[in-house]
Length: 61
Image 1 (cartoon, rainbow, N blue to C red):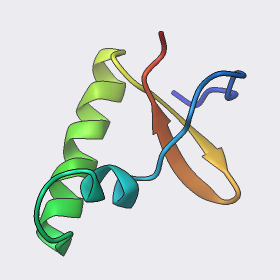
Image 2: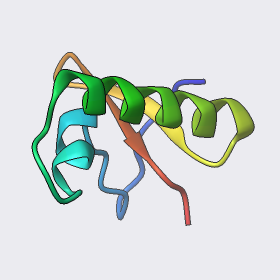
Image 3: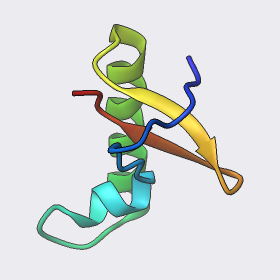
Image 4: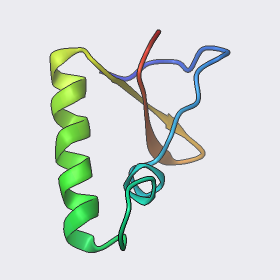
């Protein structure tokens, strides 16, 4: 499900979300964050879209 980003939303890349947690940003952590984000998109809890050629995620209010 791709969406057009609306004003007020802050679309974020997987790496930025992984970096918000304590510890190093490893390939394993990025893969796990990606998996969780895909699950959230599939259940409708998060949305995704393309911005500057990169997939970004956001949670609608």
